[in-house]
Length: 482
Ligand code: GLN
Image (cartoon, rainbow, N blue to C red; front, side, top):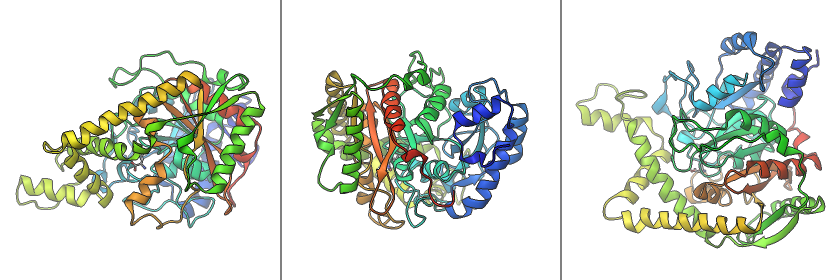
């Protein structure tokens, strides 16, 4: 049997499984050993049901597209019979009574959900420091954050303690941690993947997507989870193309735009150089590159933190101590129970956002903040629509810097919010985006190249990202000791 199965990609494991050289249980055992060795230092896993995974491995249909492949899951998604805390004390002890649609789809593609991964509480954050449970560390430098909110989904894939994972992205939470940890992360078009069974943060922005070691693996996982779902009224009823077939089409003839507003002062020069070199590589392969403008970019963070917090304040109203999750001890009356259950259950960042979101929706301020932010959102979406009349893909950095030190931004929410400056506009406009590794900072930390595609343009993303990846070896480099 080939050793170190935990270092292989989905595509490589599928070949070995189909040749019957390994069994799905071998992969689980190998991963389990890798997690035992490495996760105490990384802190990615909140929960694992190894017995259930092994039982699923016994029955795995190896002819299915992801037959026998374990996929680790961000703790914001419901996996039947397993805890789902969304990184919050509010949901301590909650066991999912059902599978999210993307989990059901993974299972019917033959995959085995294995392990729940840490995250910022209710997906609010860019560093995993907002988890109620534990710190997750960046495998490339354990004094640094893995990014967030799907930080552990990225860290586990990078540390080779997960083959692939699912994350969710509301303002960058798949792409930013993928960039910080040197893996591939794809945020699909809004509505491409069902949100049914995803614990909601900001429903008009949230989207589930794959986090993998290669672009090919991202295509395989996206294929499994994409598609219409009558249980989610915002799910798009559009055919799902053959994503793997898109990979090898090459970029010759593709038009790539560089938004002038994304190459600003304040970007780490190493990030700028790596991204520019990445674009040059695509040009060398036959893409044409031109400068474009997304003029309303500078309003994106402000609009996002009004819209996302407004939606969060409504979504999180359901956590009242009545039906599930945390309830305070010995409440004096109903009001006291609501107050104390919420005060005890939510962490400081979640409280900050509920307060902000309630404020921007309040009757005296609705027009000044919420309505205005919605108008800005429309302008941002129009910027993208205009740009995509001229280009097929937009290339940019994912983040202004590589992974920052644990604690660096923890006391400064505005500084933390700036980590998402290049990712948020995609969510506001609903378009898709991918982060692929494109180099290293002076400190040896991974840097990501972001490609943004038009609505339902995932094939273009995969085509561009795969062409780039094939010409480089960033994705093969390992953090120490993995
Ligand atoms: N970091 C952003 C936030 O804190 C985005 C989070 C996300 O995409 N879930 O809201």
